View 1 (cartoon, one colour):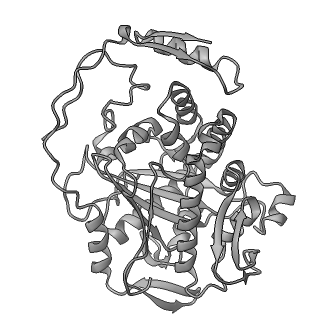
View 2 (spheres, one colour):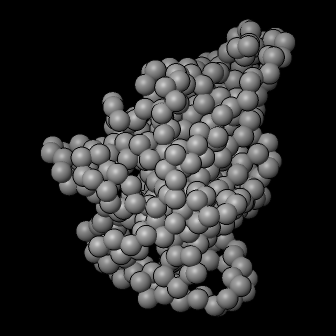
View 3 (tube, helix red, strand yellow):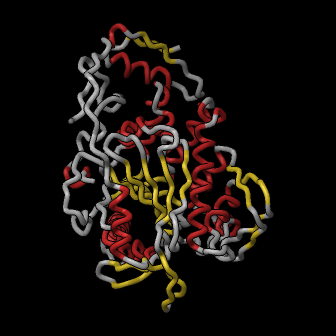
Length: 418
């Protein structure tokens, strides 16, 4: 049964956390290792990587203000292709679950020459490889979420280019596109989405990309992430040089930790596991009192999200936050793709699915949402005029409390700032 919405006066659309997170989407945008058991890292969170601050902080007047800042300041790109992004089942997923592609692109844009050397990134003009790709599936009711790491070395069919490593798809689309820089960025993202959709059999509804500098800065803002290495490790290519044991890493060390694959027993597969462990720790730190109760750090994280994250034109961070409000602790899983095998080609070591049909079946199982339960009885909303709100500014940002209070007053609440 369809969910019944509360009746009565409502907040302005961009402030109302109860509104339908799918409202306003077009049909096109709203539609939706090796052999062995997939590794799972269960994380008690409500958030995604680059946009996690928006989801965590959206429960207060100050949080609404920060969420609006992030939604207005993130970069936008025409990432969703008009074709080549079709669910293999043929089912219409419009208005239901969401598949979100999260990408960490190995771009050096914004780094100084000194940072390029410190972070061991090579060419300061930037590369176009997508070294981190995670496909997130979020059910329509937002009750859970599954995050699947997709290896950069997965050998796939890239539309128009034949078989190659997955992480080269963005660069191929970018380099062969004409027009402005924005047009070339969009072409790269679209070809990457078409490639992943073809390999997995799922439709990708939304796209979010974080650049290298943003990853470095966010990890430093939250005080770093604690990791525990069983063995000491070092790698010239990534710059990684870590002792065994528990240690807190941030900035350049964090980047080296998540980029290392040479010297690890399972190379790219083990790098995926590292990235998942680091992401879980990063989210825990954002959820900690040191960030949640510190308006200055909240603002710093949100500003960094705006500076370093690019999303597709149809993705609203506020809508995403609303859809994920129902996620419960333990309901988010991180996984790696099962049934991959080593193969070699001219470019070096690659990974191939042992059974392409099994690969698509694996992704189909993630999106097999259970039948929705009967809707709860409609709840009558309180009259905004009966609700008194006092907005206090502990952020140090001049005018933040007054701005939020004005918007709440316009919605009918009795609001004041102090």
